[in-house]
Image (cartoon, rainbow, N blue to C red; front, side):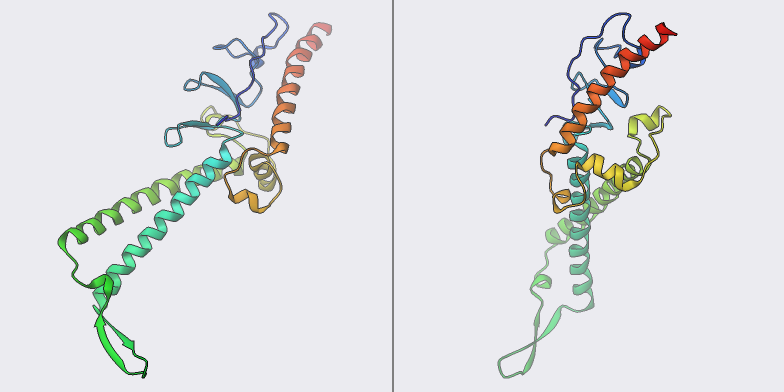
Length: 220
């Protein structure tokens, strides 16, 4: 999946301001983009490279990354609750009361508590430990993404001491998710047309600014 790779635009020596030049590729580097050593290209609004998805988290893939982490976290929580509920239910009592057609009560073993072997118990404990570890791990990643959205500052920019322009969280969400609030926010769909237009416009504006800044300096 394309994370938002900036097309290779040859710079003009002496006509392009240095802040818009990538030292590694010697091509146009828009403000807010970074060179990814894994894909060997410049990615717009790059956050980091994720080994779990084997892709760079950029303007086109941040939405799918957030959904991946969020749904993994919720799955871990659901699994932890299910396993814990089984232990708690069997600890209170292995019997349950059921009623027949004549509304007469009788007791029988709970199916999930009957003949629990040592292997079953060990597997449940290991599964609970694993889901708790992954739940904490994904919770940390979700918090990191929330900070990036709230501050409008990707992870790499934050490491470099840069801060994005202050704006409402809803504005940043629309930029990342590609559209106003809709049910499509919750599905890992391809980048919207609005997001693709914004990407193309940003690259075009950066190219014009990189040239006009030099022209303005010379004219002064």
